[in-house]
Image 1 (cartoon, one colour):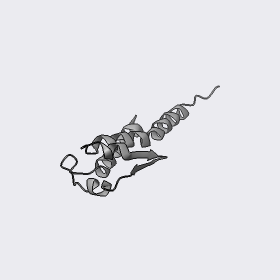
Image 2: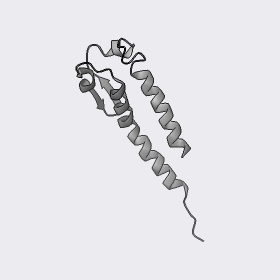
Image 3: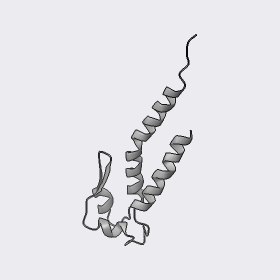
Length: 91
């Protein structure tokens, strides 16, 4: 009798979605980054699995300096990631 492997496809699906999380987090981070002239959004990069906000006022923006993003970018992105992880693991 041939054994049916039902776990491997689920693990592969979960792994694929987890691998995509850094890019999703980066896209979300950029979407909540305040925009004046666009410098902050343009200068935010994804290196490996790390979001790099490479501009001198990044810390101020993340601390809620802009009325466009009173929560900054890190906290909303953290909440986004928590929700995505729940979605991925729930399926």
